[in-house]
Amino acid sequence: MTALIPILLFIALALAVAAWLGGPAALAAWRRARIVRRPFPQAWREMLRRRMPAYARLPADLQWRLKKRIQVLVAEKPFIGCAGLDVSEEMRVLVAAQAALLLLHDHAGYFPQLRQILIYPGAFVVDRSHSDATGLTHETRRALVGESWQQGQVLLAWDEVLAGAADPADGRNVVVHEFAHQLDQERGRANGAPWLGRREGYARWAAVLGAEYAALQQRVARGEDGLIAPYGATDPAEFFAVVSEHFFEQPTALAQQHPALYGEFARYYGVDPVQW
Image (cartoon, rainbow, N blue to C red):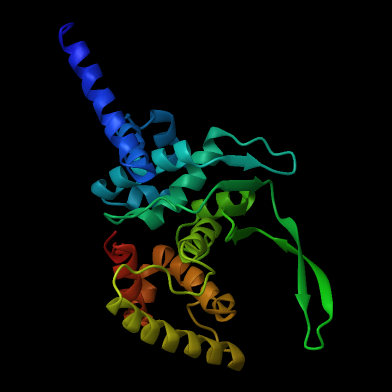
């Protein structure tokens, strides 16, 4: 065994040099490979079982994949407490676990534009400037429980993070919603059309989501109830984020009532939650 140590060290050094020569992407892949080889902490597993019922419903292979994604997100992304909040290990794990639901397919990234996750104890106030039709600028203040910024930040209210994890079937999950925006913002401003990988996929995506979005706007204008939350009618970016919540939390209802829409999201996320 002693004789193997120099060989193993040499191999590790060679891999590190190769990764460095290959650039940032290769170096990140090398670091992630080291992270996912580590055992998943038992304490984290207990957190998931206690706080996130959706974890227990996942098939065994997806449970394993979720845990590996959690390890990478916790290791790579800074979690910052705001308004006096001290970020605990449980906070990091539970946020990462819900965000990782969006990364279960084979070739998922790790939110490459995301630089910080800011966690508040509860709802937080955001100031906004907007111009009216006359060109006058108005300042407004809004209380929010989550927000995603194109500059690389996700803001979350911890009480809503807990509530979203505790009830996996109500169609509301602030982490899924805001991290769906991050996916949408990877290549620019959120517009409801995240990177699909192949050009031909966009025509089908635009046709299906465009028709469903228009139908939702009409339903909301008529004051009618339906599965998809009215907030999804705000704009295409919010439609994508809201439907992502329904996809992971109410997949059977979404598949039954909006089969074409469900099919697009199943292709995009690379999973079929109806089977869980």
